[in-house]
Length: 195
Image (cartoon, rainbow, N blue to C red; front, side, top):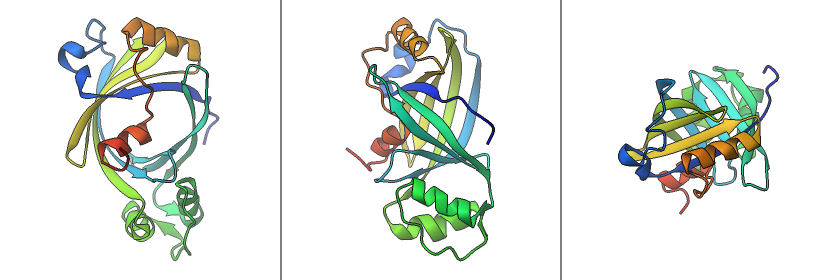
């Protein structure tokens, strides 16, 4: 992976952000993107592990500051088929003890069927996102409609390398009273893995 600077992130989930509740209503959108992703969820870890565009894409929480912002750092972006060593690394990141790996490399389907599902605690959740991008106070921001296992929600995210800009954007949008809920926790809540 190329050198990446970790970003400070804030996110919240809820159905009340579309229509009249849209805090971005007066802003010009920067673009709309649809994607289908596969999130790998573990009850033992809140690491953000997903497959997007046939890449294993993982971000790890580095720290939480006094404003409860979370700093996330990309730690893996590997193409499938995934080498056995990398497949074992993903399982370890998810909090699992990797089993003996029978293959030299794994396709997405092999990884899920042979390594993820047999454990019983890990879940592979297909997620469809429609994301609308914005710029607020120098931060990247998005409003996204999310569908996972037939359940729908809306999520708003704001991120920057500079945490004070994230706080400024939250205040500008009137979102500073909402709780910061990262993607793995929000998704686990949506699909019933946590209450």
